[in-house]
Amino acid sequence: MRRLSVLIALVYLLFPLSFIPAQEYDQTETSESTSLEVTSAEVPSEKAVKTEETVKDGIGKPSKVPFAEAPSVEDAKKGDTSKDQVSGNKPVSDDTEEVPEHFVLNINFFVRLVIVIAIIIILALLIRLVWFLFKKINDKIEESANEKIKPLVIKKLKVLTTRQILGIIEFTLRILKYVITFFQIFLTLPVIFSLFSATRKFAMSIFDYILNTLKDFGISIGKYIPKLITIIIIIFITHYLLRGIKFVVTQVERGKVAIPGFYPEWAQPTYKLLRVLLWAFSFALMYPYLPGADSTAFKGVSVFIGIIFSIGSTSAIGNLIAGLVITYMRPFKIGDRVQIKDITGFVVEKNLMVVRIKTHKNEYVTFPNVIILGSNIINYNTSSDEDEEGLILYTEVTYAYSVPWETIHEILINAALVTDYVQKKPKPFVLQTKLDDFYTRYQINCYTKEVSKVPLIYSLLYQNIQNGFKEAKLDMTAPHFGIITTKKE
Image (cartoon, rainbow, N blue to C red; front, side, top):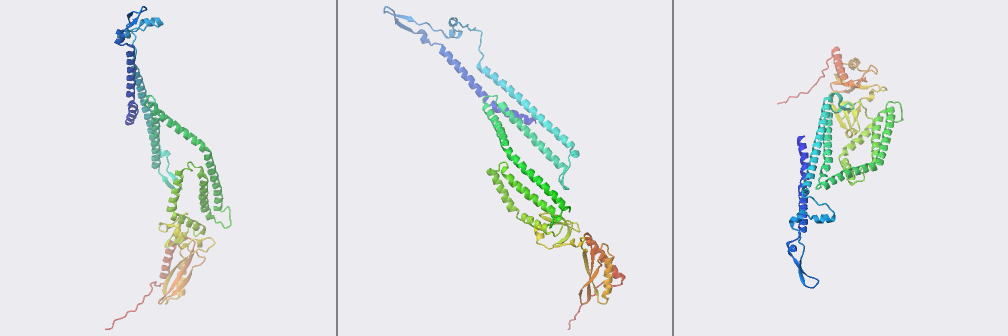
């Protein structure tokens, strides 16, 4: 703060004072030279005193008539009292002394200098007061930050922490402090420069700059008010139109309003699409009324943004279109257990750009919509709806031909019936899928609607199958045979 005050003093003093001494010295020198010229003009020369002119009298004889002697320099300094008496003016006393003009000028200069110093001191005190107030505000905010400032959370996503919000507030206060200080100095500078004739024109130019800027700013705002009202009306209409659409979409999503051929899960994606289109249309209407819309710079920036968007968003636009297609194809919904490529898991997020799947191992896999649109999708939840029998789980077991197939069927069906989360109706069934050289291939099939517990159901089913063969005293080890050839010598 002290360095700032010293810098302000140097700026305010050195700039105008560099002009003042030369100006005052020129005025003093000019006044002195003028007084000397007047004095030399009033004192007659010695030739005029001693010169005599010969004239002729009335008889014709020449006679020498001396001129009246001019007053000497000393008499001129004392003054001609006789002339004053004739003209009626009072004689000037010899004791009266005139004040030198350069002395008066020096007095005026020092008075102005004192005024400048006083203004600088007041300005420094005001700046110090402003900085002190901002420091108190900053300390007060830091003391109550944890109690009054909460983190910024949008849809369970923490955007800004308390410390980050506090940093933004402190940075804003610091910028505001410097702006106020700048305006204090900027408004005081012309006042100081106007006290001296050498810098008065500079001060007037600063005043004109400030006043003209404020005047132009005010005129521009006044002219822009009709356009601003038009923009507000467009935003107002768009906002309430979207609120009406959202109300209808919510009713459709909850099933209170039925639209033939329109599924409830289409409600939110359709609303998001309409919202983007409406705001884009509104922006197109507001564009001609934006400040500087007709300027070349604004048009150049618009073209540049359009080129960057078109070049860098090729894949993004492809994902966006694919997302729209997937939305209205309805291959899956949030919470469904699906298999995309070699990944099996539950759909946890679906938007116009990507789809995220959470596997049974709590792994999150992200698929761009373009890849999903070109891949085979297996949805395990469609068969577990209320009007469906359920998802069929199946596994294969091989056993030798020495054991009757009825026995193997009974063991596998009983193992499926005692497995948790497997439905009793429809009843499990067995299919013989293949007859190999040394054993038969059996496939056990059972129904379930607990799609989220499929890995656990398979594990329990395998355990029960092992227990069933163990209770029947049948070895599950499949025989393997090979042909060994010996080399003849």
